[in-house]
Length: 371
Ligand code: PEP
Ligand code: MN
Image (cartoon, rainbow, N blue to C red; front, side, top):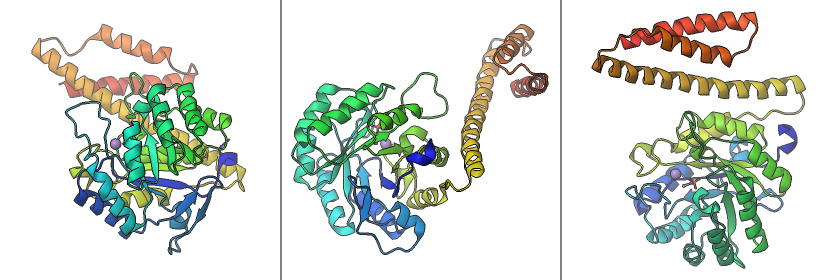
């Protein structure tokens, strides 16, 4: 289905997780602009880029850079975490807009914040996952943006409930907002070991079927939660035909006051965009292979992370056994492990042989670590 969803050009919303200080915002904006991230403006209605930058690189032309994102007021789960620089940052953003020509996009969670954004010439607001879950608050924001020129980007709610997402988007359509986009940022699900917020691709795909005129972006930062996974998440989003990406970019991620583990440097962001692959529909076999390989890559990443996590847990078990002087070898426990793998496996002889070899190696390795 991916090829018929592909639309050009793609949209990029990039910038730091949070506004930390005036110096930090200018430093990020400066590196982003120095590295050649352009300053296209985009008309979301007809999906065409007006006013390009002067770059002749096809990758830069194709992607452009459409919004500078930044969390001014951060919705943090832990009240002890950094909450963003607050109202003051809006005046810094106004200067950034003037100096670098970026369009500015800020998260809002109340009518009061919307009002401040309008007063400070902000171009777009996004509704965070923790806000989309609450129809009262979404309606309050929809009333506040009514009759403004703001673009509104609606992230999916924290939980995988498409109706909450659709309902929030409808409230902004009813408020007469012309430029609305949806953002898939993954869902908070139990027992998730790989992603920060698990993607659930069928939900944005269903949203696209129900609301075909709403562009959908993928927030690769909050899905991945780490730098390494973002390329794969972005590629998968492109395979599904998403219209663009949201990503957190910081000039010095290690020093970031929030989400430091997932923010990309500007050059990492450019590299990610330039290495994405877009299959043409010319060669069907190649396209099918490309799509399948990406799915396998996603499974390999998950397998590798899960196996590493399993080994770490083995280390914890070893510590408990050592403390209580319990013998390392527990044949009945291992039998239970083997049963789990057998129950969930393919039944053909080839696979069973592989599984026996694999389990032998797993057991040996885990005993060795415990030693
Ligand atoms: C963010 O984009 O900074 C953010 C807090 O995202 P989310 O609402 O998806 O958690
Ligand atoms: Mn963040």
